[in-house]
Amino acid sequence: MPTRSSTATRAFLALSEVPRAALDMGALLSTLPLLALAPRGDGHPVLVLPGLGGGDDSTRVLRGYLDQQGFASQPWNLGRNRGLNRLGGPAALLARIDEVALEHAAKVSLVGWSLGGVMARAIARQAPHKIRQVISLGSPIGGAHPPPRQVPSTAIYSESDGVVPAHVAVEAEAPHTDNIRVYSSHIGLGFNPAVFYAVADRLAQGEGRFTKFHREGWRAAVYGPSHDRSLTSTSARVAAEHT
Image 1 (cartoon, rainbow, N blue to C red):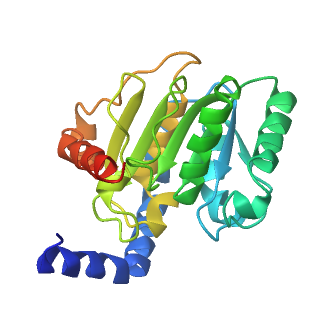
Image 2 (image 1 turned 60 degrees about the vertical axis):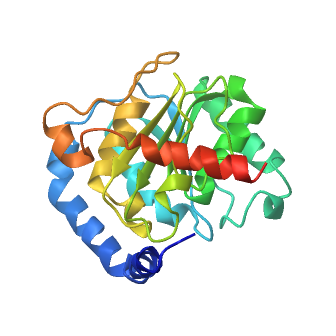
Image 3 (image 1 turned 90 degrees about the horizontal axis):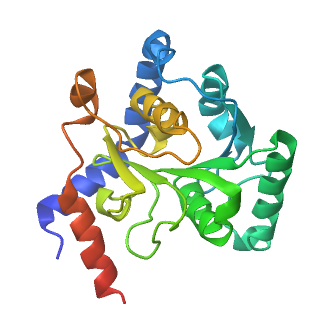
């Protein structure tokens, strides 16, 4: 059962989302020169899916950064994200993926923010042969949404997320999955410099290759020494309780 203090903390995080997101945006502007030093891409296409109620305008800054780093970022071109059912099922998103894959003659990586990450994983499970990699940003994926078996999947999450609790935003432990903790609001995940660097680092891995995100040197100060595996255990326990 949630304690009174944990409920108060969740309420504070939710109510402070907007001002904390403004801090994330300010930090991004001041760190852009350093972010240019992140790993470079190989030109493969990256389709970026917005969160609930968001459209391509909400992912424009992230896509611009990925283009700068040598990836071929792509808007999803499906209007505001109101869920796959409102789009008529997964067919519309699959058609967009096919369009991008055909244009670039390559598998497509998916980066999904919040609900967009849930959708990205669902599509990767359905059509793993079309997807190179999946990255979710503050997405409620824990327990009920197992990672695609054949597709490398990374969850970027924040323990100060005021919308999606950390224990439901982490991946199940597996050789082809990873969890990266950042310090961010939920709204700020699409503008946070630590998120940008981690996304570029993951996407820069060669096709068919996957290694866990390392935290040596300065990364330990930015991302923490390691992923808190107790969160993964909590996610697994919650999933078991609902099966």
